[in-house]
Image (cartoon, rainbow, N blue to C red; front, side, top):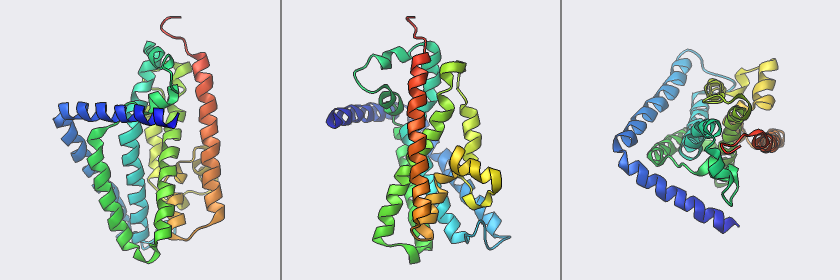
Length: 263
């Protein structure tokens, strides 16, 4: 079963790279636009630290690592999942989802991974360079064990980012809107770009449990920079698992409510 899905995904990759080479202007424009995005995010916090020595309990070097972790998770998300999420509402509203439901593979796997943004691979490599730079600023906490932990936490962050995005896309099964709530989702990604400790009270509960945007990059950064904490780790993994189960359940309900083109 695993080998079957792996072969299928390799076909997805091959097709995506061939298609990317046919649109070279788009390939280079994505690189330029994302470099500007990275520079704006880093510059934003550098301006803040020109006026304060600490933000959410972190100094500038620590915050730069947090920013680099978020940029890496975002770049992987854009490369692997985003193109698929953008196109899912149209598949539901036009009835073309039928094609995917009749395939002998998981519909969620097919719809989530079919399109690989090959033009964004260069951006992932650029962000890796930013992460290495930020790790150099925090070299005192860098160990082989902490790097393994960070790698696992980044993978969890990518998964959680995807799950949060799906939470805004799946309602299209009932609303039949052209983009679901995608625009609203991108407003909430701003919470991912900020250290979690700047939020307090109800807002903190919202961003760490109900819509756990702060867990995507802030909690991985905390576990790496401040030392392993079982409470933080279990909270992160527990919320991710709960969110994954919830999305799987809602996805099944959405498919049950779906009216195919042939119905």
